[in-house]
Picture 1 (cartoon, helix red, strand yellow):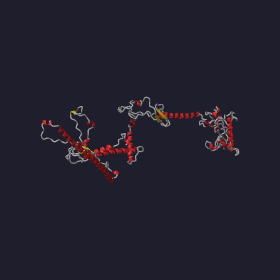
Picture 2 (cartoon, one colour):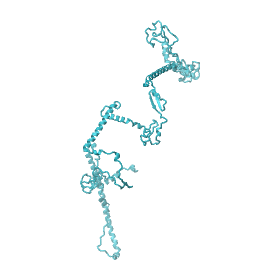
Picture 3 (spheres, one colour):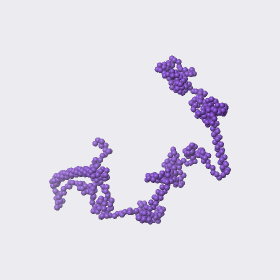
Picture 4 (cartoon, helix red, strand yellow):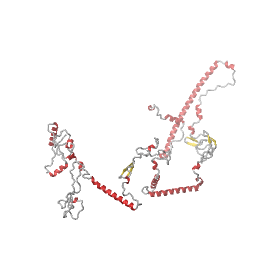
Amino acid sequence: MSSGAMRTPVSQIIHNKDDQDADEEPKKKSREDWRKAKELEEARKAGTAPAAVDEEGRDINPHIPQYISNAPWYYGSQGPTLKHQRPQHEDERGQLDNRGPKGLDTTRIVTKFRKGACENCGALTHKRKDCLERPRKVQAKYAESILVHDEHLVNDAAVNYDEKRDRWSSYDPANHREIIEEYEKVEEAKRQLKAEKLKNDPDAEISDEDGNEDKYVDEVDMPGTKVDSKQRITVRNLRIREDTAKYLRNLDPNSAYYDPKTRSMRDNPNPQVPAEEAEFAGENFVRFSGDTTAQATAQLFAWEAHGKGVDVHLLAEPTKLELLQKEYEQKKEQFKSSTKTHIVEKYGGEEHLQVPPKSLLLAQTEEYIEYSRSGKVIKGVEKPKARSIYEEDVYINNHTTVWGSFWNAGRWGYKCCKSFIKNSYCVGMQEPEGYSEAHPTSSTSVAAAEPTHIPPRLPENSHEKPASEVDSAPSSESSSSEEEEKPEKKKSKKKSKKREKKKKAKEQRKHKEEKHKEKERSKEKKKIISEELDDRKRPYNSMYDVKAPTEDEIEEWKKKRPRAEDPMLQFM
């Protein structure tokens, strides 16, 4: 919305306060004034009232937004205007290259003191407190005749923002030529002095440290260098074109890694090439060459010494650290040699220390040994096997095997008698405790496997009947004998079934009794252990016996173990 309200700068309001009376101060708009301004704006938009006119007589469109039509406070507009939105003329833009006169005005010479001039020098352009000349013995105010020039005053009538704040305003670049000429005169004088020195003393050495300040920038055009003349630092950011790139040393993709960002290859690209023949052995080669290893050992020694209470530092006291390290190495060697001589004096064996070099120890011999494809010796004598320093195959206490030849239920023993007691006397083959439980005797299993029903044996006749009598025997005798055998078979079957039932009942009772006994034993053990020992001091595996599980325990475990793959598990 267009508005004809003026925005007076704050500085102008403060300035006008001093000149105007209290009654003439600008008053705040009342509500009635705001209402009238609003009605006028609406009438202008509707076309019933004439539009606002700027200072040039142009109509201002009432539909222009307020943020466009209102001029900023520093523009200094006195009424409604759009001039701040239009391009400025060339004469109003200002010129940064306008140079006003500077320095003293030599066109006019003053010989008498003027009223209001500087009391010290007599110039009219400044006062005594701003005078830059030294205080005179006789001031210009009291002197009979003076000779002074006034300064040129700088014109502050700047057109725009840039011209007002131009730091090089009224500067003449020709003034810089004086500085160059002065520098050239100094350099010429230095050259003449050097020539005279060389003429008088041809062997004299002339140092360029004082004169040549730009000695670090002599090779600016060298390829691959970046020079900062302020810091005197050269930075390599490119490789010379004649050098072979690191990634071309070995084209195998599985060789040393090349980092393209930092252009570094730390590992050796050709490890099979000897170090003295390799042109490039990786950048890590530099890290482990020269005094780097010595520096690392010195730093480690300094840390260890500091940890043991010796006040020493690698960077603060390098000489002290080096002397301490040398002294430590000497004492260490002396201690080693003294302990070596002491052991040799006590135990002997000095002749074994005088061993020939390894090249002679592992040299070829004249012994010829020929082997077959299977590895057997065909010709020559096979090398003897290295035997232990301990005695082997020594049988004690009537044993026929050594200790450790038998293992069962996590315990070692003798295989001959299956005894788990070391250095015990052999009493022949016997089954140890806990071994019979794990492996039940074959007699019981065989007895269980034997059939319970034994058919009755027929009575044997003392004399045989002749064949004619047997053949002529009537059928009544055979039928009667069959009838007698049937009830006997039924009776034997009933007895065998009763025996099987009794055995099963006995086995079930035994099984229940054993379970009950095991539970009671485990409870008693837990009580004893909890009473006697703290849980933290309890020995390992003290809650149960270390022995092989019995067949009943294995069968019970198979019944009770969970089966995750069972599809009916979730319905149980």
